[in-house]
Length: 220
Length: 230
Image (cartoon, rainbow over all chains, first blue to last red; front, side, top):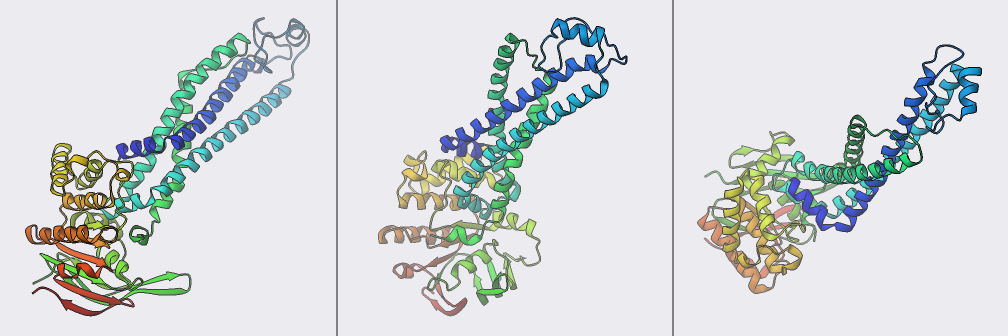
């Protein structure tokens, strides 16, 4: 059934391309949002762990706003002369977390909608064929496999391209001194999110196939 | 003798909210091995509903249906795909072939559903393509085949899966007279040589002579049975 899914994707080349581009767009955004967020929170944890009112941090620490080095005057004012209040830092971190979380969520939903829309359209076009498979004795599982396999193939292709785009983006960010975290655990997390996004997107198509009316198969 | 298909008082009522529409009413019939039976009647007379009920893609509201002695009404929904796989092959007027797959691959799918291994499936697919005269076009996609050839691929799928019951809906609907007769001759040969039971829903009175019996349907009922061959 995996083979059938692949052949359907290859037949509808333009549609498959749109699906994969949508996934690339969403997954690249998720990668970068997560990477930048982790870059920010990793360095701000240096500040967050300071228990005293007057914190001392190594001179090369990056600040929690843009992952860039602290300008000398802030470095002296905040960590030697003045003292950053813990509440203020927590507040900043919460705002950042919420903002990044919303960006990631919106990217996830966007990817899901694009993939869902194209997979659904493809399913509707092949509805009679899926119905025929069921009439031939294919179980719901067999038929669903084709739809989920289409989503899975699109997800993996989209993910691989996004990974490459992110690797290039990380290099570009490095030149601007912005720290973007790019590590195996994050890659696996984004892979999980990509698969989830695409499998959710196939859900409505599966529902549609489950409700095929037998009369459709006989209609001229 | 117990028939391949035995239906007793089959009734199907479709429900749309509060509205009820009767598909077929109290239909009883028997379809035997080595028999080609025509199901004739105007559009809306219940032919498609009856084919769907016998093919186990619809469940009757009332009545009983048995295929080779297996009572269908007692089986839960999850067993029906297995029953269809074992006993039934459909041939549709619109062929319903996978447009993304070649003629050969369409047959391969049918064989894989039967659980056949790759080597055997490959051999069998080529055999049936040769049988219907499509060896040369085995790697053609349905869209690149003529109507006649598409119908032959659909028949080859049914042949390959070797189900004992073939249900065909207007199989000659898109064919000219000569090809329609040729197709029906394939059905007749199959029924005799391979013990198949063939039920054909049709409007095409030109092919009447090929049937053993004709069942005339009207308003969801079989109103007349006519024996053509003894």
